[in-house]
Length: 515
Image (cartoon, rainbow, N blue to C red; front, side, top):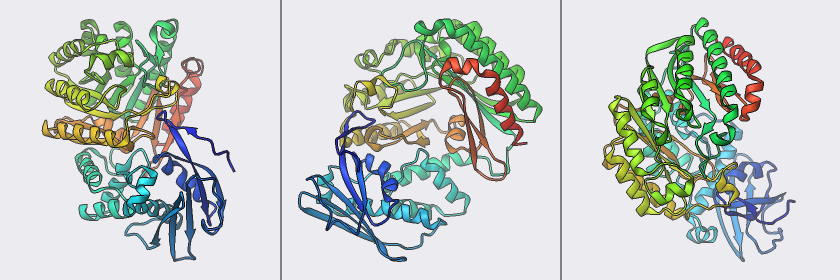
């Protein structure tokens, strides 16, 4: 049995130790990640028939008892002399699933319903049931899209989400709305198999933001590697692009992200975008997005260079409009700089994506509502609401910075969603992260008809995505089904530079397998 001391949580708080007992040996692994979202760490597990004979050291205990097939499962929470339990009968679902997946789903669902039906148990755990029920994956919309593919009605899909996965009605309605907005943009299984999207990852940033965990390199410290990195990127773009074009692949969307690509010299931006145009076969109406997340990097010279290429969308990311917050998180712009940058971008006729982060240290509802008012007044085409997640590799993780309390976080999310809806924006993509604000979700909102196609294709994983540059991930969609094979470039920039030829060959080989 593991030691029972508190363990650090990704959001900077401490996980509470939880003793676990079950008569099925595999249950601890099924529940471990799920229970982390409630703030508990399984410190040991035993195979036994319930909690009656299990000794405790005063802390809580979770017990699982499975009845002989095809019976039921009982989950019990024991703490300070009190016991709360709930039983569920194991019944076939209205959708196809393996016996093992049903067992795993019912185990989590029984715990979820224990909390839903026992208010005193909720008080003991100090948490209501998760609004996403038992779903823990990054892309919950993928499940609903599969049900749509299989011909389920909206009512049937909502019933499955709510009854079989415990998703609250508000989240299931949100998810279904997102799926229907995406639907016209998603290729059918046998359509567009010769289309790909490009993600180009740039590792440098003007400074390191406190919340950031991406493989980023502060420019003033790593400038001597910039030329070598640009050369490796150009080599990868040209060789992979030439091979992809010869195999008949066409680029439908391109996203140049990072990092902050617009912090490179304008001449190098021109050089890399020229390499893309000269190497890949690009569809005439392709979506080209450049991440200009730092407003201070969107100079007239940089925008003139970008405008000389088929770029039609720019990301300008305030994260917050509050000056104290911007200084605290390490940003080098103020609200006035952001407004000026967005005006210059708008003058070029490009669509604009913006990001805001909910739950930044020092910010409550008042600060978030101020940022929303200021950003919405600028009428960007897209606004993505990110719940702060304290991740390994960020300064916040090292400082053990915490997130707002869960109920406060849920109110931040709800008020922000309401403000965007009132302003006429619709949700069009959604994903989740571990240990994020209130166990919530990141949602992209759009002016209707102005959705960012790359975001949809990337989240739903229905197109091959070629990742080029430091830390970039490629997703190769296998012909005939929706299965994927992933391939990642090194996050370490020097390794990326040193291994570039091997990385190129591996990527070209993977593409050849799709033809």
